[in-house]
Image (cartoon, rainbow, N blue to C red):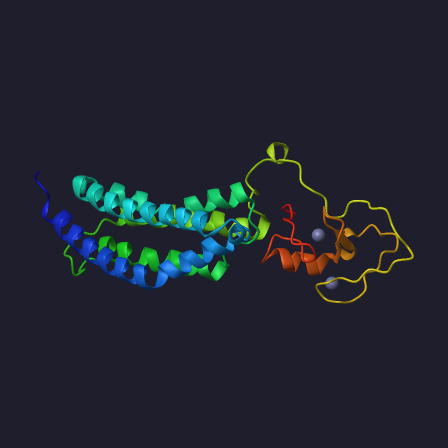
Length: 249
Ligand SMILES: [Zn+2]
Ligand SMILES: [Zn+2]
C-alpha cells in the first residue's frame, strides 16, 4: 500500500493520541460511563446481579470492539483519513438521536456541549489549519471550515434541543400524543394536599386560565406544584411519591 507521507505521520500522531485517550478512558471515564449507565436504569437493582453483569459485559465488549475495529479501519483507509475524521467528528449525532428517542429533558448542560465541541475541534483545526504545525501537514482551510460548520451544526441542534425540547425539529403532527400534566381530576375538597417536593400546601381551588401557575397531577394521581415537578423532572423521570415512571411533559 502506498501511503502519502503526511497521512502516515498523521496516523502516528492520532494513534499516539488515541492510546493516551484510551488510558485516560479506562481509568476515569469508564466510571463516569458506569454511573450514567446505572442512573439510566433505576429499576435494574431489582433484576438481580446476573442480569446486570451480563449487560455490563455487553457494554464493555461493544466498547473494546468498536475501539479495535476503529483503529484497523483507520489504518486500512489511511488515504481517506479526512473522510474518516469527518465520520469521527459526527460524535454528537448519536446524542441527538438518543434525545429524540428517549424524549430526554435537558440531558446535557450547554456549557458541556460548548466545551466538548470547542476542545475537540481545536486539535484538527490546528493540524489542518496552522501553516507551521508540528506535524508538517499542508494546511487545508476549506476542509477546516467544513469540519467546523459540520460540528457547529450538530452542537447548534443539541443546544436548540436543550432550550426548545428534544423534538423541536419534528413537525407537530408527527409527534406522539403526550400526557397532559394539567388534566382534570376529581377534586376532594375536604382533603388538603401537600406537595412532597417543597412540603407546602397545594392550592386545589378551581384553576385560572394561566396553567403554568397551577398544580400538576401525575398519571398515578399525585399532586405537585407545577414548578416543583418541572425542576424534579429535570433530574428524575419518576414520581416523587410512588416512584412510578413519569411520561415526558
Ligand atoms: Zn411544591
Ligand atoms: Zn405517584
